[in-house]
Length: 253
Image: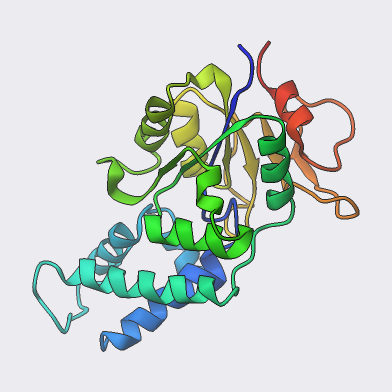
């Protein structure tokens, strides 16, 4: 079945958002709330095993039961996460978190060649739209037929729900799609949805197990800034940039 659709993860895939984006925003939100928590680079890497910001906060509380919260109401975590999202989107609006090399190039080429685009992510919708609008320009959210984000499905990655939802909304089958991820949890979600998956590793995921990925790269590459192939999978021969022609070679014929 012919390739028709690209489905992208966001954090770590479209942009290196985690270490100097989300982590920083979490720490600023903690400070605003009067918490003396500080998620350093190493700790945050460990917490990324839990998908979803609110879930990550709750997991940290479980790890550190001695921590006393300044507010014991049930919605405290939700409000804390909302503050973090506000801080993070302000960072995006200031252009502090650019797209990864090759992302804009591939998106533009995909649209020119008639491929359909979608987002499937655990991050909040505001995070997605702000990143797109400030990185690709006003109106760029319309490039994507579906932006499946946040709590739109009950189970987050590594469950396949967000991918299944995106495909259902678009009326496409897994055999028509190529997913783009950066983490083992993301790869598992995409593969369990039946999707052929390209992995572009990020700072936090270089040592993840990407068994089953169709292709593992250190990025998508740009002319004069070639990508590095970590695992070639179904691709044979040299590869300097990932483009639509390469994508067609990945899907079973």
